[in-house]
Image (cartoon, rainbow, N blue to C red; front, side, top):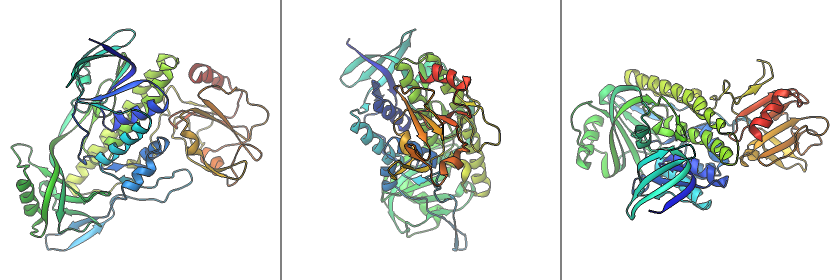
Length: 495
């Protein structure tokens, strides 16, 4: 049997796997992306893209496409038993600011999100291999050997590292023997994509409360509505077109809602689980393979994308010669984030079930999540600084030496380490090198901050240094360019 050799084998072509593949492709890291399903997923499932994820998608050159394809969340219309209703804004939108360019979540059905990611991957010369089922694997000191079943016969793939992004029932996680503790949330629901008539598309329609509630949400960028409704924990539920139509008629008490077609449907039980480990040797877990959760708060797809965003640059660095210990930071940073996300989503589920409270705000936007206690975060500034090492690096509108507008985020698209020297005197202490951009900021420098947005967002004083990680988080903040801690960091991590 012929063996295919690659650096990274990604199992699972959902949002996490596709994001990781794009990040590796733009860094010219050899990989294979496989999925056991015969064709791409065609349902809505997750439909919310949070502001922090939009920032990541901007770096991958897909944010504008997604915004064009989707739209903002509509207000929710709650229908009363007496025939009246009231409208409520449940997803808070805020205006974009210089340091936060996306002020509100974007509604975009998951199948459109993943389709845009596949298009970007194709532009980079790659595509998922569907109908490729991982059947088994072994790892040794140098790599992973995977057995894969395809319609054309079995193949062997030899990779330096493997990533299991293969969903909540992850074959990779189970084969590794990684425990997946958590709890059932005593909630079961139906979600489906429908075409229908009788409802306007300007609001998200909701009826009832508790176990009898139902919602029909217009899916932005499509002619579809997404149906969501709880169902009993036990017993069969009629998921046929007729059964779904009957449930809608019963719970809405409406006879004017006519179902034309049910395009996708799913019956699922909710639980919250977190893998005990994200890494076993040369194998990593990402996305739903590492954490599953209720859908409340729109956190799942976003957390999965951010797993991949955290892991991608680290895998690329190690493949290119960095010390493999860098990969230890993936679990250290991402598992704690997922634990917090699971707790929040569970609290939101309880609020929705008990009080019908569906309001969402700053906490769900994921802009305040970071890694301040990570081993990769070095901070030599005081606690009163507006940002600390490990935080998300703020955006800032600046200008170039010729007066042209330049957003700081546009510099992050390179995927490099970025050192900002703010009004520094003299030549840089560090030399340019592959994967590092040294950018001088000042009145006569290549990047200028006439309105003070960069200064204010970062709390800069003349001579300050900020080193930004390839994933747009602050690695080092110091007042001294000659700081021994910065020198060690550059030698050990930047190369």
